Length: 109
Image (cartoon, rainbow, N blue to C red; front, side, top):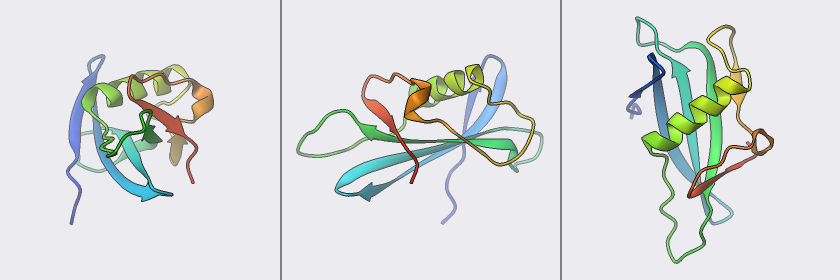
């Protein structure tokens, strides 16, 4: 099944993004991938990726990436050097200092 690509506009620049999740050691890990959107539906430039987990510990873990999380990810990534040029994957890591209200960045596996 193909994942739905969502659109977000940040500072007059259009991006496409997709989120998914899996469980690792009993925790729900949310993955977000973002790329610069061009004229065609294909990926343009390097993909921005980040892995997130819920800050809270409760009976159920329903962590999910929402548009305001994606906007924060994009803004921080651009400030630390993510640009539309090049190829590959740009990983946002805990050391980059992303602060979200209910999610925290973890190292990619």
